[in-house]
Image (cartoon, rainbow, N blue to C red; front, side, top):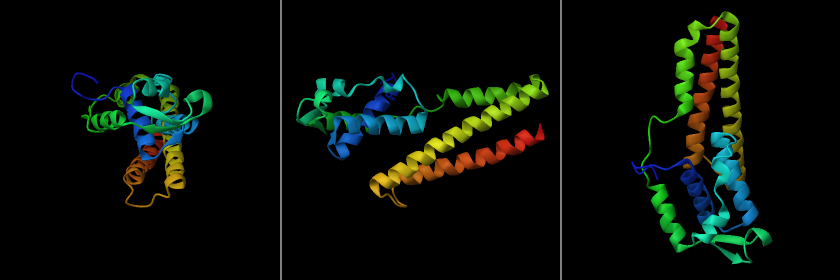
Length: 183
């Protein structure tokens, strides 16, 4: 954890893996796929975030193979008591606000966009639109996957949060369309 007891990116992936296997034992490959899918739909593809090894969680005694050894035989994995304690620590960690680098970069682009020529301003507006559309597609895919996987309905905390985020992205896209048209 960071000094202020907030999670590092790798600890966020660790939280995802432990929370996933705490919900139900899974085969090694299912756990790896589920974590990769969830993280990439929220953050986009990131090699830095995918570096957390399920084998390391096994080595640390946070998960265990119920049958077999692990990755080599696609064993069914379950969380251990130590894993539940670690999951609790990660789930109850503080949130760090104001660290979203992307928001800073977007704000800086808008702040200094007037310094660009018209063609470059249009290109930046297109880039912002493309980025938001990609983010929306990832969240819509995650929502669909979650509903299909868990039969989630209104009242499911993740589904409600995703709906909120999707609504914000749809409004951002509308605003960006108007902004681009005004250039």
